[in-house]
Length: 397
Picture: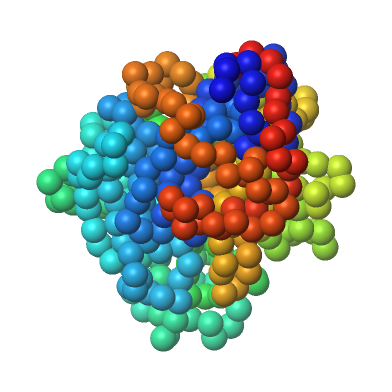
């Protein structure tokens, strides 16, 4: 296939002159593959992994993939967002490092020193749990409320630093949302190391994002109550602001659930940029999801429950959209193509710069069999397409 003629694979919209060129990494939530696709939706690499995502992966500077796997059975089956495994794969799928703990939750962050931050479920001591406010009455798990231990894990598997949520949260301020169960105080769903070494986190059940002082352990900034609703994936931007996916589940002061992506100034606590759709409920993922500011000023967004990955300009124009074609059956969510998070990498990123990115190594099943489920003979995944067989896009790549 020539460079000027590409089969469509999940891409519904693409404006090459306005989108940020690169490769997008994503892991379908109920599949055992991590996929890297180009801007035309062609698969340029795949990692076959042992476990279902718990819940995402990301490329490291050495070109390897760090991936959180969901081991079974989980330590606390009642909780969504379990992990159990943190593993590093080389480009060919070989394991170069692995860490396991059945109490691992569903977020991690690689650190500049080569170690990794993880979160683990940890029961809140009864004397503190009794003071926690909010949530649905009498919904503790066997009488317990769980928080998290944030730990730095060295390459030899040792714990070299630990921060316990319940030692630093304030029961008078950090109040569980009224429709959440009381089995989890925070449900920490994101960890990010900031350039100064401090840690940016997201506490879903209290509708709060916060910055932890790495040296003192104190929470030096928190924001979100009355603004956020079940948010995910806060990241620090070059201008000092924080980008966050505001899911909108149980949103205050409205009867409409809708999602948005916002940029907040932590110095003023003012929202300086917002993306939402019109009508607002067209963009809505009550769980998971994320957003990434690209270096051209655009924002890459993952709308989890629709398996929709899309890029918008600062003015809110959609310039690239990809719908994951990988569908799975789930006892609660039914047939779905959900994706927890996606990440765009530039062509000069160390993870892909010298890699073999050959789309001809993979068959475009989506273009071959449209509008019905098919089974990928390589992975066993169910694929569903809404495109015409042989659809092509003319133009350079």
